Length: 337
Ligand code: PBG
Image 1 (cartoon, rainbow, N blue to C red):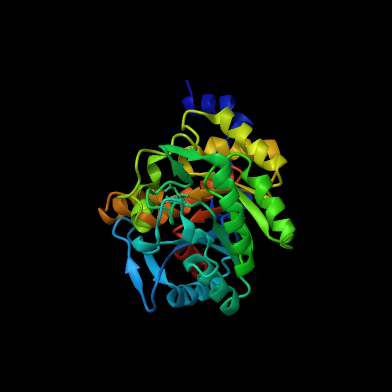
Image 2 (cartoon, rainbow, N blue to C red):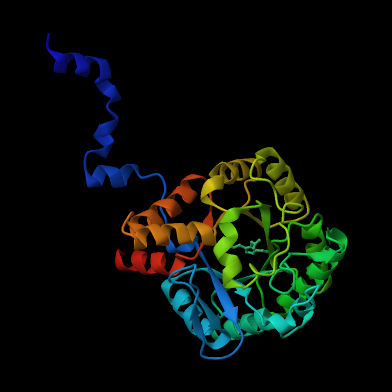
C-alpha cells in the first residue's frame, strides 16, 4: 500500500505546516509581536553621585545614583522605551518602624522623579508607594505587634502617593496589597489636583519566591521578619486574585499588573479577558536572574529566551511588561529594525 498517499488523504487540507514553510509565510501568520512600546524598565536608585553599583544577584543590573539614572533614562527614552519604574535603596539609618522617609518630600525616589522629569520629559515615570524600601522590618506596611495594619498603611500610602505626584510621577503603582488602597489613592490624588496622574494597580501580587534578588537589590532581605503571606495572594489562588483585581477596577485603577509574570500567565489572560483594562506583567527579579544564571553557564541561549518569554506575555494578553531586560531588548529591536 502507498503510505504517502494514505497520509495525504488523511491530512488533506489540514496541513498546518504549509503556513510554517518559509520565513515569509511565518511572518504573514505571526499573531503577536514584541515592540519597544511594550517595555517598562524598572531601575534601582541609591543616594550619592556618580554611582553605578552592580547587583550581584542580578547580573547586568546596577543601582544608580540620581545623576547616573538620569543618563540611563535618557538613553531609554532615545531607544523609545515609553516608561520606567523606580525603586530606591535608601540608607539604613533612614529606615524605621513606620517607613517615615516615604513621607519626606525630597526623599530619594522623589528626587529622582524630579530630576528625570526635568531632563527627560518624554518618558513616563511610574513610582511604587509600598513602604518596604523605607521600613526597618522590610514589610510593605506599618507593623505593630506582629500585625500589618491595613488602614493606617493606606493612609500613609495615600500621602506618599500625593508627594510622588507632586514630584512629577505620572503613574502611581501601589504594590503593598492593602485593601481599599486604590480608591483612597484616587481620592487623595484628585483632592490634591492630580486628576491626570494614573494608577497602575499591582492588582494581583502573589506571595512569591521569585522576588529574592530584588530584596538584595534594595537591601531588605536581611531585614524582613516573617513573610508577606498576610497581604500578598497565595500562588494557589486564581479566583481570589480575580476578585481582588475586580475591586481595584471598581475603585478606579487605570491599569492592572500581574506579578510575578511567567508562572502566572493564566492570571494575565483571565484578567485581560475579565476587565479589558490595559494589563501588564512584571517579569520580576527571580525570573530575570534565572535566565541570566543559566545563560552564563551556557545551559540556555539567554538572548533567545529573553525574547521568547516577553513574546509569551503578549500572547497571554499583556499590553506590556516590566522587565529588567528592557534596555537589552530595546537595543536588539533597534538593531533589527
Ligand atoms: C515590594 C516589592 C517587591 C518587588 C517590587 N516591590 C516584592 C517584595 O520584595 O516583596 C519585587 C520586584 C522584583 O522581584 O523584581 N513592595
